[in-house]
Length: 199
Image (cartoon, rainbow, N blue to C red):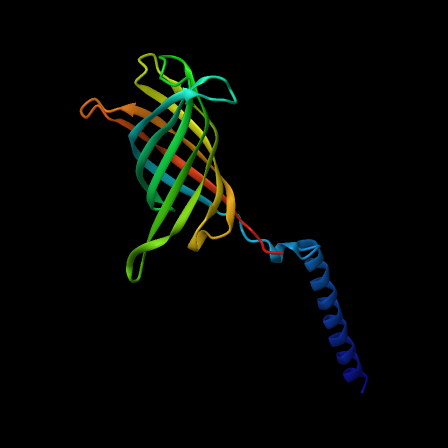
């Protein structure tokens, strides 16, 4: 009789300890339950290879009061996490490249339609789009090549990326191909996408 009482007491103690430990662990991991509501923040790395399609229109920027090239544009292919077709249109000051001088990127816009490969082949998965927050092009001494840095705002998306926001950074180079005499833009585009949570 005493043995069965001891067994029941031990079982009750183990059960109670387990419940207390579980509650404590939940409190530490998720004090307000927010971790269960917030989605992950994926980092997506994309390779960019693009070609200049428009050298822009030169005009006066009414905000900076400086001569600016509006719509300096590139069209290219992306591979990696988001395979697709990138369109990038930049506003640049000064308006024309000056050897050894840094060009400031003062605005612009971009779009990235994405085509994913699945069981049924390659299909349109949706698009990401946004604006250019800031950036620089540091020209070499010849004025034919530059190191490029950009911060892109992710303002939204469609289909698979409906209701997302975030930002992306681009680090790459701009070079004039000696054979074709075409201006090429290549580098890495790293997305930090934060899903919007409906309240």
